[in-house]
Image (cartoon, rainbow, N blue to C red; front, side, top):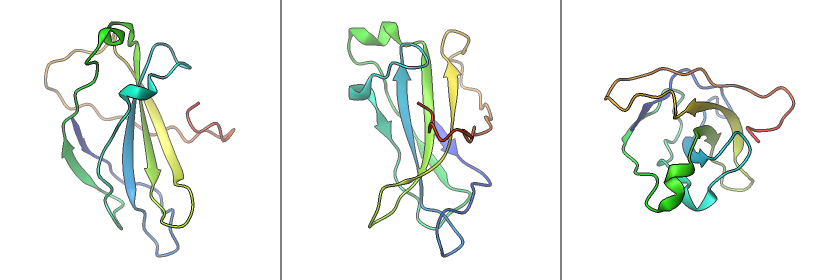
Length: 116
């Protein structure tokens, strides 16, 4: 479940952002299961978007290989590629599946690797 994001950085000239979140299951910190990627809706002009969106990952045998969930936050743009706002990884082996909210801080990769 993706609940919300708070205090996102401004990425647009209008002083706001149009954020969406991408969920990538990973077998390790480098290998993505791109066919299992999920994306939230885009929240226009919102630095504190509320999503309340539920996703199911792992509808085939590769789900057993998932070790991490990479969560990327991006800013949607009409005329150019999306702006990278940050990411964090969830270690699924250490994660409890009971319904608790956990807060994560975005990592803004200073090397420009955009979570790769």
